[in-house]
Length: 315
Image (cartoon, rainbow, N blue to C red; front, side, top):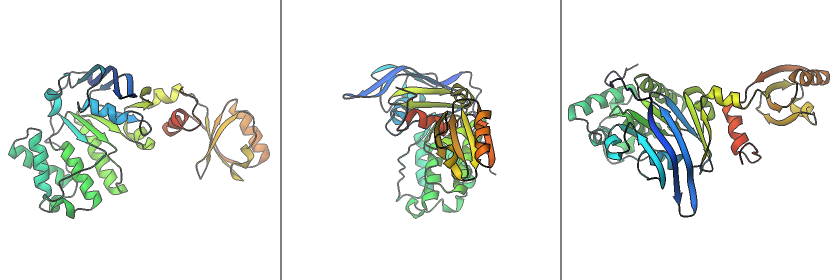
């Protein structure tokens, strides 16, 4: 593995890299973000989750100073000035876009010089990243000649080539095959180890669970979750039971205390109110129980509780 030893940064004494205080943004009569406050701890991977149209992208664009809030304050990398922090931020948008007629190296050199890198530093960084992504043999080829996966890796390099202090990734794994996904994931984790603060927007709840130090959820423009996965799961209690029964979930029908059942294919995930041992006894009387696991709700389950069609958790 090629190590990112060229990405060095001074010890950052700030406890937070991004701070939003009582931020509101409207578009006409629509309130996209309402009275939002959050802090992104320096050196962390901070997950942004929420349904489409919930305000995630608007929030990201305000952090990038593409949009300005109607009210409230935004501080990025210790300053409220967009220009002061701009060269120290890398951004991978969900809507990908590269200059298809340009050679790969020229595209990456363009992005590197936009962020203030000298010609020598740009070349060194590009060489390291192309080798890390297995694309060194494609440096002189035009972007239009690349496969979709290759082009997405080039887009990622364009966001990190200047070794940003703050990296904002909007759906970085969208459309990637498992091999390329692992390459990008490992690079993100190494950047974090080297001190980069990463804001990571995703619809993949399992990836958010595995990668993020903190998770923030926005719904209908309002913050509904903000904390570690452990603190979020603890707040929702241990009311989830994973079951595998002979005959599938038919024995669960009509049982008192069962609030919801999700068929996961190889097992059922049940939200249950009551003594789990009583439920186990009732199920065992009806047939063989090969799995009975009391667990905390997954982030996916919490997401559905808040934003699903039958949501009752948040008004």
